[in-house]
Amino acid sequence: MADIDNKDQAELDMADMEDVEEVEDEEAGEDVNSKARQLTAQMMQNPQILAALQERLDGLVGSPSGYMESLPKVVKRRVNALKNLQVKCAQIEAKFYEEVHELERKYAALYQPLFDKRSDIVKAAYEPTDEECEWKADEEEELTVSKQEEMKEKAKVEEEKKDEEKEDPKGIPEFWLTVFKNVDLLSDMLQEHDEPILKHLQDIKVKFSDPGQPMSFTLEFYFETNDFFTNQVLTKTYKMRSEPDESDPFSFDGPEIMGCTGCQIDWTKGKNVTLKTIKKKQKHKGRGTVRTVTKTVPNDSFFNFFSPPEVHEGGELDEDSEAVLAADFEIGHFLRERIVPRAVLYFTGEAIEDDDDDDYDEEGEEADDEEGEEEADEENDPEYDPKKDANPPAECKQQ
Image 1 (cartoon, rainbow, N blue to C red):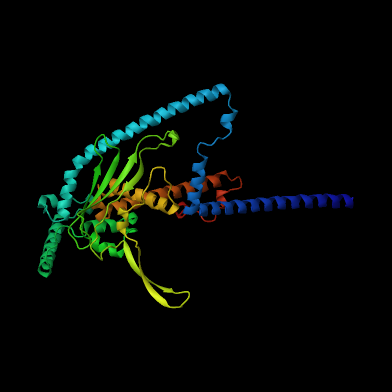
Image 2 (image 1 turned 90 degrees about the vertical axis):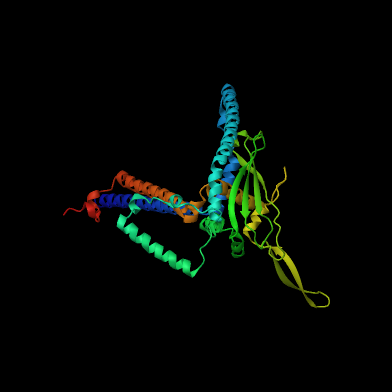
């Protein structure tokens, strides 16, 4: 009888051990899954890994999955008919973007008088009237009439003091330089030696290609007379294409920039900030004598923007040139779409605050999603007992 009891006990012990092992396996599995999730999150924050992953995914586009090969021949024929329809959709979409470009050209002509007046105010060619300078604040920022009058009087006294101390500034000094410095994408291009030159930048205009001409746009940078170069206008032209590629029509996703052309800057002698002079010592192998050699090498500068790498039809670029062009296209598009139309808001910083708000909204949504997932996990957990929650939220505690 004792032997039977011992045998039963041994079987129970073995069962317990198996339970323990299963629990340990589950815990180990959870640790592995947790580490995997952490590793995945870290990888997704690495831009180099993301770029490599995107390149890999791009390489998979159009590659057979095996499913198509398994379809009956008659179904494959019908799928081919759908693909032909898709090509025709891409061709119609290309026409749509061509008409959008025509609309942009039409409305650019309507915007231009306003942009010209903006330029006149910035460079002190026009002094706005009191009525034009009136700006109604948001309701939450509005003050009482008495407070407004008090502040106006105080501002008037301060203005009079400033006028006595120094000459009244003309226009809006350093308008475009301030815009550039307020935008990360542009400020990253600026060097300290660029700033004295950009103080002379008076306007940036966007010109679209004429009707019937290949799709393109030109950025025109207008400078007042300065000591650095003799050009009054520096230009950058972006050539675009809005038609599906015959070899890969399904990749069409709207107009794409195919290349860009800068301009020659006529630098004043000794003022070219895109070049710098360095001195190097060289030792003669035989005689052992040392000499100093002066070399001119490229220098980091915003004005390299006007000398992009040349793209020849059918030619290939190295990785560095491709990276430069990709950044160049992004900057050109951003100047055209955001900076030129909304320059004053980037000058004041309001446009930047709006961009930041958008970022925070996205992060908030992500956080809400994560909280929702945690709550769902608790609800789906069969062992979860809300009564055992030792720390309920403060608002849930009964008084």
